[in-house]
Amino acid sequence: MAVEPIAWQGDRLRLLDQTLLPAREVYLEAMDHRQVAEAIGSLRVRGAPLIGIAAAYGLVLASLRLPRGDMARFLAGLEEAARELASTRPTAVNLAWALERLLGRARACASPTEAVAALEAEARALHLEQVEADHRLAELGASLLPQGGAVLTHCNTGSLATGGMGTALGMLRAAWRQGRIVRVYATETRPLLQGARLTAWELWREGVPCTLIVDGAAGALMARGQVAAVVVGADRIARNGDVANKVGTYTLAVLARAHGIPFYVAAPTSTIDPATPDGDGIPIEERPADEVRCLAGVPVAPSGVDVSNYAFDVTPAAYVDAIVTERGIARPPYAESLASLLSGGSAND
Ligand code: MRU
Image: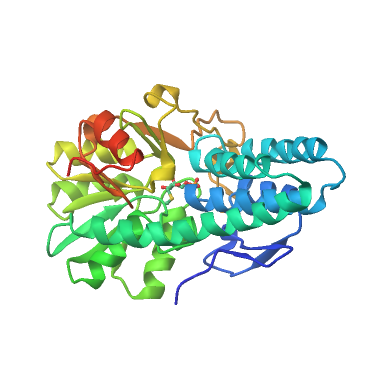
């Protein structure tokens, strides 16, 4: 049974609190954009595409509460709410992309009343497009995977991260249904265990064979010949194909190259950021030190120890064998293949 992490209910947004999974399935009802911003910042809602969808509905909630007398004041209030939502997580470009798309729609309206209706329609459209993109991406990407192998993935890129069937995890689901792959290795993904708590849970619910490993075990499995491919998601892909994704992704890419294993990135085109030339320009979110000092709220390190807690890292394009999107599969050189996908043409695959 597919999990529904987000549902628009006309005047409120229903969100599955992912911080409590897999122990408890608790849903929240956000009534205003500040509650949505809190849910994004605290990772109750996470995964780049889902953050974008949540922010879009958050802006609809803000619009419902703004005074409708004057269009200029209405737009100023909307822009302020968009800034609050955008500041929650800087790396996932889907967040800024979704907000900009909705703001553009509102600016084209003649009155606040017209804008409120247009914003709701746009947020619903964006949500539906992501569900459809996941399907296309999964079918396209599954064909890349070697027959009969086991595939390693990192973090969570499933329904919980997109509201659809997922990106990298959607590809793996499709490949398993086709009888193409036999097993998924899920890294636990310290510090917040999205792999252990969320990916293993999603695959287990669906009956997809899944083996959970500690992050540090990936190289040993590759050396033993147990990994046929690595597939991960992305939070932002720069114009040259450099990929920001959950910290640890870069390590996996280097290991995969060292072992001659293909390394694929799966993401919707909304994750490609043509305004950022390369990985150096991608803002990397730093999160609280206690996420590392503690495990599930229990201290596992001295309380005063220094911590580095970058939530994401950048994998240079040179380590990425292909980028799978809903519009096609891009291959190096990415500056050309990604530009071609974004302009509506076909990639070079
Ligand atoms: O910090 P998170 O859990 O939001 O990080 C999620 C990831 O890194 C995913 O790989 C990425 O957002 C793609 S989700 C389809």
